[in-house]
Length: 231
Image (cartoon, helix red, strand yellow):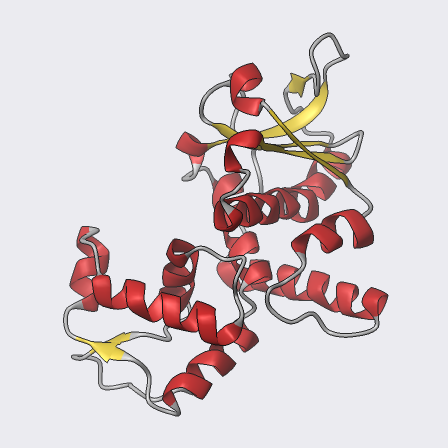
């Protein structure tokens, strides 16, 4: 069983800046700014020069493993169960990219011990960050999730899409904050997320990921909120 990776505190704005910087690097490397759908595969394999594969991580490392990054080899593996599920596959790849960008430098500088795992049966075990679905509240996992959201759904593109769809008036509904806190399903927000995905060409992003991104960017508001303008 892997031990949670100890990482320094990073707030959402710092993670957003790190994701934006990676997109800037990609734009300079490619010669043009990326537009949704963000080409995460090309960022990983082209810009970062990481190798990428799909394999049976669940069968080898446990049913709760969807992605892993081998640090010495510069290799990312996504579990084969995500093939055919574009939104989850893309987000998991963005999550692993977050580990590579945010946490690999910490591990290298501070020589933090990380667990050893073999990429394939009978291969030598080497340092790897293995992501388990039950550990999303760990700081390192939250940071990688936040990075993935910022990378795949750049704030400027999401805001521009909301503005194109609704003008200066933010999309508003009754009781959204209460439903968010209670975890109650929200058909209105689900429909809104689908609309933004379609209108903004975020075709490799899941509805769930877009719902959280809209809420985090405060681009949807409760009817009780006096601030309903897009700033």
